Image (tube, rainbow, N blue to C red; front, side, top):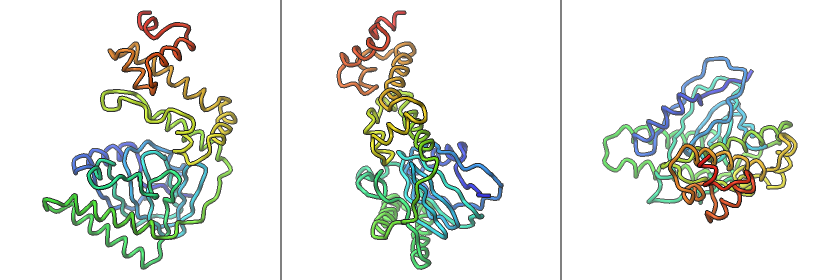
Length: 294
């Protein structure tokens, strides 16, 4: 049976907290996973970028694809595409670095690199010589982050850049296949991405994805395919589902916050407050202001 490593909610929170304390960057060594677990790690919300070195027979799942890794690989994941790992043997070696987009704010934009783009390649199998080189980079990361050097974050940025450019020069893994339950898995991913847009608050004042095309792009599939999948699994179109969630969040914001109508409209992705008013009235036969007074 497959074994699953790293990814519990508690550990994810701990990693996120530790990363914030170290300048939006941290690096970890993967510890052996000894507990038998028959279920794969579910897709989870992650709000950081990750570069991982994994050794062992495993599968990576995201969107409607599965990538088989028979031995060892360098993997790049981003906050927009939830993913899942299955391991078929104990993994005794590995490393991963996590960081936010802000970590590179004055250095480069992560989204410009293909390894972090929705349609880019994310998994790169390594031979033994390449493995040794990547492990040396991670060893330098571990040493640097433990140091007291004043500019160690600059060094960590450069080391991360080395991994990014090293991967983009490699031939990506081609052992991909479409899964039989792709529709169900894509539907799950879509609803997770939709759920990530909320709740809105001072730290997250506006939805990032608003249209069917934007969701499809993040999932690396065609909008028509996403629409067909959702019709098959929940008997609703992509736009219907998005509108229903927007309406639900609008009602919460109107009742439970002091935001004015324009602020709520902006937060929910409407370019004009009048557009929000028209949308709300079409759905509930009353204006946002009338609903707030009920």
